[in-house]
Structure formats: structure tokens, C-alpha cells
Amino acid sequence: MCRHLAYVGPEIPLGRLLTDPEHSLVRQSWEPRRQRYGTVNADGFGVGWYAEGDPVPARYRRAGPIWGDMTFADLARVVRSEAALAAVRDATDPGADGEAAAAPFASGPWLFSHNGAVRDWPDAVAPLTSGLPPQELLSLAARTDSALIWALVLRGLREGRGLGESLAGPVRAVAGASPGSRLNLLLTDGSEIAATAWGDSLWYLADVPAQRTVVASEPYDDDTRWREVPDRTLLTATRTRVDLTPLKAPPLGESPHKETKPGE
Image (tube, rainbow, N blue to C red; front, side, top):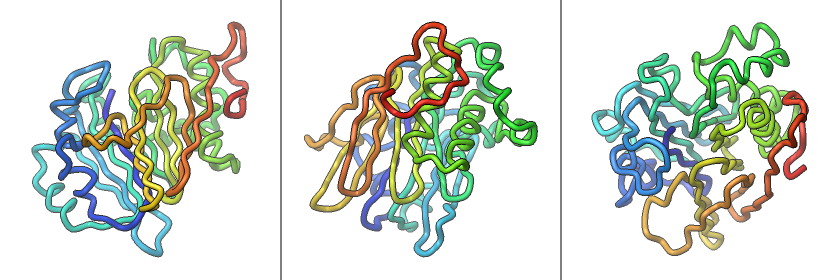
């Protein structure tokens, strides 16, 4: 379980998103307001951001709690970006793989985070690995449920699927193989954001006049423009548009390997 956040919009210091607000991600690490599972997110954190003219994001990740990292506080004060994804982690298995298990996961232009847990990990989803090439299994970022989900998402992205479809297929596959899993996923390429609400809280703030969108596990302030995303919903967003598409649970007996488009 964790709290995570993604932003696209005008260039701003990371601190304006992650440290300055009254209920910032830093505060959510010890005092989340809407977290349904777990109470403290102290098992690691990370932030990824994009520099002008470079499509490949940089990352800063650590295995400890975000509130104890003074380097991060200084970094957030001066680093500016038009897009970012950050997360604080409450590990399902404390200590598992340390910094390597801290979101955001990354490949090429993409940043990814998973808030939730796969029920009966790893046995329930072992059949899903048959669709991944051996080299991808051997290259998993960590030995965690989030890392496997990221591998499934990344496969879709590399095959040319859009951000939303690349999340929807794995959510349905994992939910079919392991009912009761919590699968709030968050993905960005620096221009767009895709996210799923599946078992935990998800909110968004769309500020069209300012051309900025924030998607987060929970609001970081009391702005009345925050809107909650219904459970089992796919969100896709740009700076000026947010679309919500219902995600149906896979029917009983449906093969967990079947790829589907959002809303099917």
C-alpha cells in the first residue's frame, strides 16, 4: 500500500506538489487522511521528473521514510519540472528489496507506481508470467507484486498500446487471477497520465485555465475542485482534459491472459 501522485502542467518546483501543501505527500507518509489499508508509509519513497528537452525522466528513490531525508527536501525546493510522479511506500512484505522496490519504476519515457497488493502473492498470479519472455522475468526491478505488474504494463507499452489500455489489460488479468487484489495503478509519459481506481482511493484536480492536472491517492489540500474517482475506473488525463472509463471485473472463468481494451 502507498500514497502516490502524478502531475502534468506548467513548470513548478517539485516542493509545491510534494512538501509545501498542508496535506502533502510527505505528511501522507505518516498521517494519510483517506488511506484504506495501512497507516504509515515509511518503507521507502521515490520521485521521478522530466527535464526540458529530455524525454527520459530522472529519479530519486530511497528505502527509508521520506520525512527523514533532508536531501530530498532540498532537492524538492530547487528542482522544477512540467511533469512528475512520486510515491511513499507501505510495503506488503517489509524490507523486501529496499530501494529497488520503491516507486516510481521506470523504463524509457515512462514512470509507474502501484498502490495496493496482490492477494495470495505470488501463487495466484504465477500463470500470468507465462506471457512474459524469460529475459523480462529475470530483469524484474524487484521481487514484489508491483514489479510484476509493472512488467505486464511495460509489455503493453512496448507493443504500442496507449497508457490507458496498458493499465486496463493487466488490471483485468490480475483481478481475474487473484480476486480481491487492490490495483490502483499510476502511469505517465511526461505528457499524459493514466490511472486506475481498483480497491483504494483516487482523486484528481483539473485546473483547465492553468493547464494543469494532478492525480493522487488523496487531495494534498482543501481545494474544492478535487474530485474522487469511482472504484473500478480507468482515468486518462492531459493538462486540459480528464476522461473516466468504467473498468468491468473479468467474468468468472475468463482466461487471465486475455488482453482487453478499457471498458470492455
